[in-house]
Length: 107
Length: 118
Image 1 (cartoon, each protein chain N blue to C red):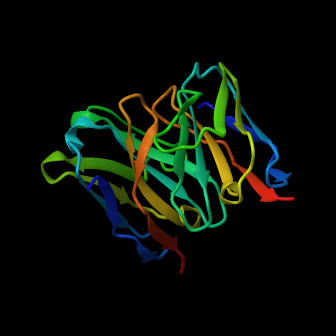
Image 2 (cartoon, rainbow over the protein chains, first blue to last red):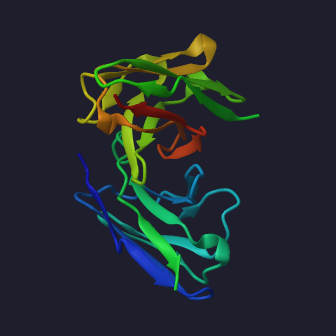
């Protein structure tokens, strides 16, 4: 099983600032990496797939990068609606394991 | 309308059984791999199981192997999860999820809550 590890667990950021979230895979997942956003009481929302492709309707302030085992989600200028938990997920094999999540909170 | 609607959750005693259902609409269900993903109270997302098109392949997380069984009925556009020998740690919201053709999860149901408690 591929283990996904996210860091940090919590990220405190002021509105308007940049947020950088990291995700590491225990072995290469090529570019088969997605990012999800989840707000309390809501279903996860797909932000990014194939490492860097934004899903439909996702603002350009969200960007993804990386390959192999190291990946990054960057939110260029945090808006109030971006404070949430973010999960990375690999789909290199059909199991689709998730990281444990990074909570982005207001500083 | 493209959607997934889960049902069948509820309160069950440890060792008991439950069958979850997921009704798909608005897309050709038989063309897609499907999965169940769960989220325990205050916890992260955990992949549980997947099933391929035509039910050719299935796979399970180690934590549920031998106790949970995924199945599908393409004629009814429905996905199922038979849950046996339930444990307290199976308590979670269970999401029915569609795989995009590229392999990522692109459509989620609203989830159904399963609570395992005496």
